[in-house]
Image (cartoon, rainbow over all chains, first blue to last red; front, side, top):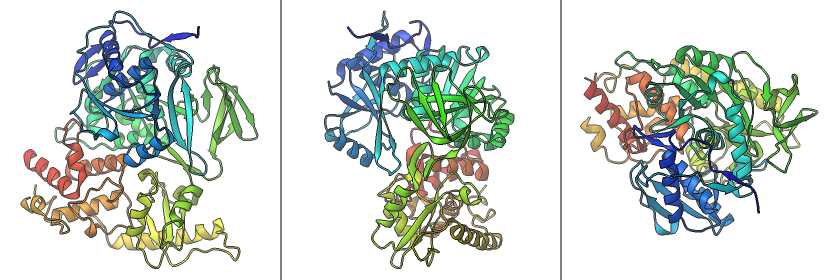
Length: 476
Length: 100
């Protein structure tokens, strides 16, 4: 008989989640999951669609109990789901809604279930799941843009979440409310807002948690908070202006704020930490295994890799082995040794880029751009690679006689994810290609800086937003 | 604000034009002429400006900084508010009026 592991390790009476301000204990959460499990189709794979964090928790737990593998695609719009349906013809999308408003789902797009959170009674025992059950498959874009699958056994997810919490310093391992700005189907949000609370004395805040004012409200309540966020969110939170009532940051300080998905600069870390009064921990991870390492972004340059992982540096490539995954994973980033189990991030390999926590390659994006009928030439680039201001986005140049940039943007939007759409997308007469039609980096750099200088000149004379016009500003 | 609500497709009101400039500016959409954003066209779909949730976050912060209006997802209508330029402008105007 194969090994079984518990679904979670919490006391049944522990406060587990806060839904619309109401506490739900572990026993009621388990009863919700067991009740939904009986209503799920017995399909091999299931695509969980739930806008609210508690609904997602219930749906994922229910799928585990039903023996279905949850597919976690990066792209969850109609086109993304259609592509997934081609790859997994037996998969079914299940929309679950309890805390939110009912959803209408066309019958061919999957199954829609609704329920009332906390209303299915209380479980008296913690169910178990086979350790080797394939619990989830995460998807990333590979180096050429094709979709790559990363299968996660229940043992990998269970032990990783258990160890992630236990490796935190003791003063952070306190009962707290967990507020997360990352969607639960994103690997980082999945690990830290769905799985870690199954092993830690955390009450998952399941309310509005995306807009800065919502995060401020969620943090500003009795008790301690652990905030799970990204550099994009930390920047927005640090910039949050005063409200009309004079409130800026919450009066209550988060006990701990986690950041992942992109490097957090010490400057942004300090600004956030000063404004919100929180300690920070930056997490580094990969799609195959999940979280791998951490550092204090204010005073540590190197990431400390978790002690249960084996790491081997060859040149600047780092290979990681987890006791819960058969395959050794070679990380996409370049590293340098910095001490025992410590490695300094040196940058990405080849032309891989990461935007909004999603990975693709410039090669794949360029191919999508050049495939547009009417585009004669074009190139995507990362502004910061050319010492241009870092907007956190990609930019592109396009050469076309028949299409203007907004046409190109519309057509690109049909081929690539919104996160990778170039900002800006600029039309130029020609790219400075050499006779062998290669585009030398130095020539591209010179062109980009020339365009930037022209921009600086025009923007200093013609501001785009003109406060004081007799409209929104003048109407007060 | 009747202008913003009654605006048919295509034509921007002055307030919508100001909001369009703010969006183009904060999102670095240099290739988009703000005057061409149709107030009734969905901004966050492939066919519109192709914006994503990080853009919504940027726009929310810019609106808080410029108009003192804080957008919340507690409001079930947030998706509607962000759907079009017309809705977003009308929401900001209505919040400013409520605040007085």
